[in-house]
Length: 93
Image (cartoon, rainbow, N blue to C red; front, side, top):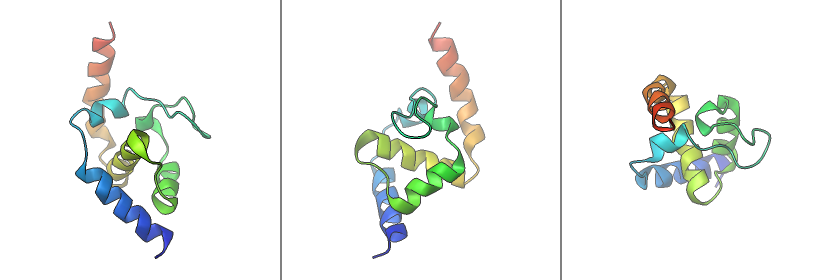
């Protein structure tokens, strides 16, 4: 099986276990490692998310969030996160 195929199965598996708070986590959690460490998951560049999709997402919650963000980015749905960014800013006050 090619690694790209494996990544697709991993994405579908992760999508099936999505938590209701995962969208909010995308705009509040930061990348814990790698080249983009410290950047909000919602702000990761598409080429980086595509790399994970090709090579496989990490295990656990971070992998689930990266897979979700990849699907959102790949389908041009990033603007749907904008209202959540505002809500996150307001709740932090």
